[in-house]
Image (tube, rainbow, N blue to C red; front, top):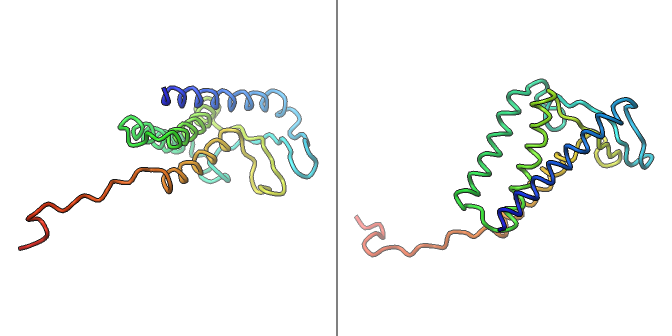
Length: 165
């Protein structure tokens, strides 16, 4: 049931990401930028042909492959039941949803649609909903791995295997 909730949540996040990108393409692209809160938040249309902060420009195939490998590995970890804690499942669902949202753009448009422009905090980049979902998912994943993942208990040493030669 928890896994089903994770998949449903991921589907909703992908839908939200694609809906906001459709809005940006339809209404924002013709005007370029709209100031929402002057000096704080603008919606600025950007076609990102790279990854975060514009790295790996015009490497769409590489970015598709790398992102897909990360998503498949994370789903593999869930499938092998290495990640079963609700916090870990939420994190995996978010990272996969964000990665898939951006991969949809790369695959069908050849670039990722970005439009969130937060001036005082992130004046060096414009991003999208999928980027936010990935970032929050990675933070939750780090918290999960550091504080919630069950560690393998110490195994007692079997008699006769204490290292005697």
